Image (cartoon, rainbow, N blue to C red; front, side):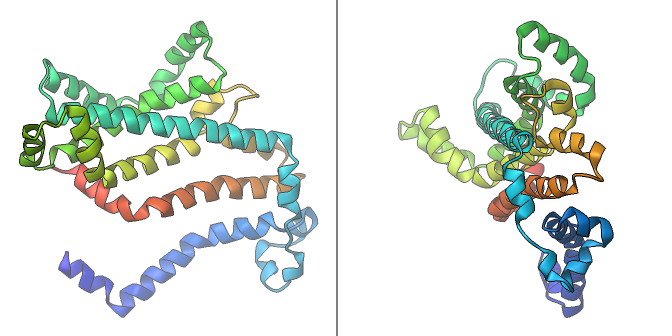
Length: 279
């Protein structure tokens, strides 16, 4: 670890990292500038010309985006899908992980092995059977149906991650809390959750990014009134030449929200992943 820190402090390494960062940020900058240019400017020249002609940049496209009923509805549908799917996975996984890590009950190890085995099941395998089930239950083509699918497929990884993190907590700490009369619920909410905050934050980032950027599940399970932003933007691509003024700002809005979420929790990200990935 000290060798890595010394290496990162090297001037050549820092310059290299800055260059890599600029390369990764170039598509984001291009999308931002494209979203602020008119259709005429976008069809006649590249986005980089905005650096020499800044007068072509304006917020008119974003004003028009707010008046686009399809885009705004899809944005709020994405929020209504991503937030519950992330919240439910984090809450249910935290409860299950605590039980697998610190509670003794019959079949604990076999059940946990089944949960781990579910990690290798591809999402594509469950699409058609779950679609038939949701159609019979009246959930097909609805936001709750999309949320339930994401929760079901997000739980195995979430339980695995949090269980490994919770299991590393000192056993003496939990035993002392029980000797002081603390109930399991009180130990979980007052002790385990605060200590497990880095892993929970990492899990929330993973789940939110997966659900927010998903198109496959939403393309199958959501109808026209419940489709998220990814599906709406995909439908706009069919007319790319005539509506880049809608597609570019819509894509930037779809991209910037996960970026903001990541940077809001990024200080917990590496710590949580490293602590929860190995025992």
